[in-house]
Length: 110
Image (tube, rainbow, N blue to C red; front, side, top):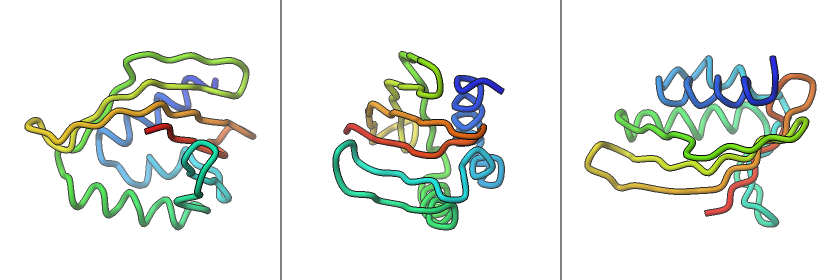
């Protein structure tokens, strides 16, 4: 699976709130961080806990890529999202680094 296909699969699982499928796209030691900043989650268990809470707190949560660039094993999305159809809304640049067919690192610019 290409890096772009993997990131798309992850986004589709996020929108379906399919926690298992979502977590299956991440490496065991994946890191989620703010670009050039603090690490917010380290490891698949922490990622699972974060998104289990997100899906529970926001059952109508969804996001979409409005622009995507890719080079090799790096995919950068300009993503928009909503917690529900009425908001609140959010926007971020998200850099996904792929290693051995899984997402190894995610860096957010918010």
